[in-house]
Image 1 (cartoon, rainbow, N blue to C red):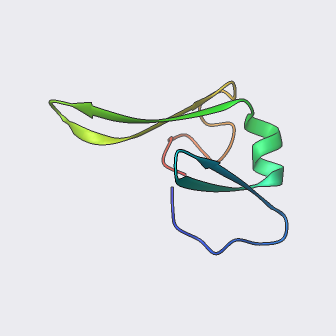
Image 2: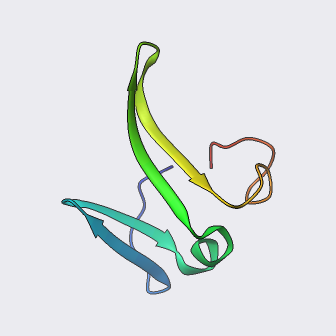
Length: 64
């Protein structure tokens, strides 16, 4: 995940005061997509999941 400027071809979602921006093309390939904030003893961060197999969107890792 990275911060980026919104473009005309992006989709924008607001959920509970948090704004998500994703390219429409990527969204159409990975939907439905689920973003959660997770707290654990190992640390905290975002968990992103979709029906797209790991590696199919941007390589072999899940750190797009």
